[in-house]
Length: 487
View (tube, rainbow, N blue to C red):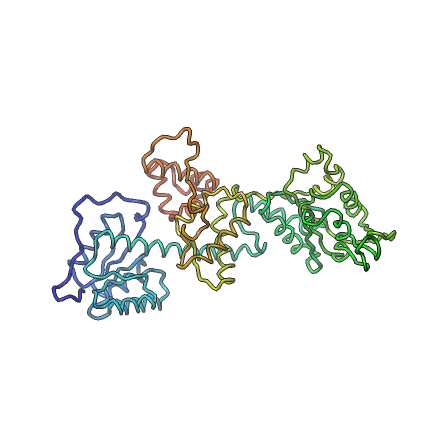
């Protein structure tokens, strides 16, 4: 109810035709709660003309019954009503733990109370008289978007909990599930493993997962970046040296292979090693023997060797830069890590994982990304793979001031990302309806027909996706082949 002396101020009616139904508003469910019948009807009409599903209640008691029976996305509630007012409705909804957003309507005189209500959990407040119909509809949509982003964040957290068996290796795309199966298969053995993948894909994480799920898990895991150690020091680092073996060798030191005895040695960027070092590595694999630099003594070691490279080792063998016998020894079991561009459907899970990590590090409470920020991430080619994505989220967590990361919080090169249509040379003007149809089919194709995953990437509910597919003439029956793939 309005607190002005002139009586309730209804929302302005639109003089133009209402806008067409859009994907942004089509699935929004709103409850309008006000004891003024004229205002209730006017608000309901404004929201319905924008494609929203609207329920109404004339007081707080009816509103609570409606919310318990059919929870809406957003409740648009007047603060001043007989009986149960808006603040009490808000308090009870929060106490019941029902995941909806509450928008309070108030007169200018009640603004201080409305601000206090926001601290108690209200999403926002609207002051009467309303500025325009568009302002009301926009506020409702933003509240609904906030609710759905928060729901999506919780869903992703639940999925992440089920993936903890592989630590920080995150993903449920078909290609990553294949990687998980290979890890499970090779971990119990002592076989040498070669991990292939671009820089930043997480090769060391895979090596650690193999070690942690092996009988050697309680022993040492030693990671060595062969490309980061000067070539003249690699042998000493790996195998150790005796005093006086070379200038600066003032004492006798064991190498990393001895330190890891009984455990696992991970040689990252093994393709960077010299031919002389490759011969010594071959001896370790074949005979389990090492010699410290400057010592004639042969020592036995029991280590599992896991190697990784972002190079094409077959091409290196053909060019004479890598020993063929070592290549075949290392590559008896190969695990290829897909690039991030090959598994874009894993980005939401990875983002949520990094958000949790950096929320804890920076003392933040960021719930997720806005839809437009998500779109930018899905369109980026990610040359730096998962490492680049982690850096983006880490930086955004520092700069973001709201509950959700928006485009303005992303690094500058992503803020000015120029979205291009694939195949620009064949570009032709399309209606928005045609663009929507083509985009949905491309996302479905990327997800191998998995409709649930496609809906998550598109940022819509699975029911909405089914409605669009049905409108476009596709079979959405549960027993159809395509539906089966989505199960």
